[in-house]
Image (cartoon, rainbow, N blue to C red):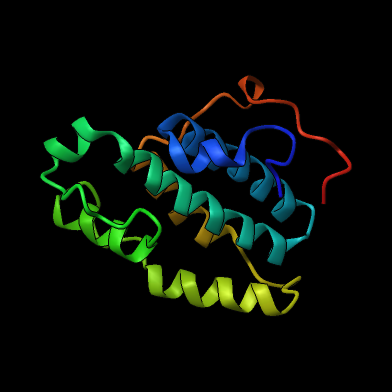
Length: 149
């Protein structure tokens, strides 16, 4: 995992700050993996970044109140989180979760060295910018262990 030893996994589930750090660590690692030709691993890593980026955005009680999002919203289900953000007007439907899910399933089951990831990465980064996970200063993140996959 790209965050191994760099953060508390428990905090990524319990606090907005932990979720944000995990999302950013996975974005950094996912991009690196993509550019290194580890396309399948990069896509799966970005999927984790998506989940924790959405969690971060929706964890703050003040934001949920402002967006009129129920306190009972399931922060473990990315489909539910995306629908909530779309219905509140934060996001439009330009990020197609069903297509991304299909891509992640494919990446989890096979290597995809010839897949042109750039259009997907552009849409993904646009979504991460809309929910304020990006941009970020990579130098402010804990240093990545070069031995991690």
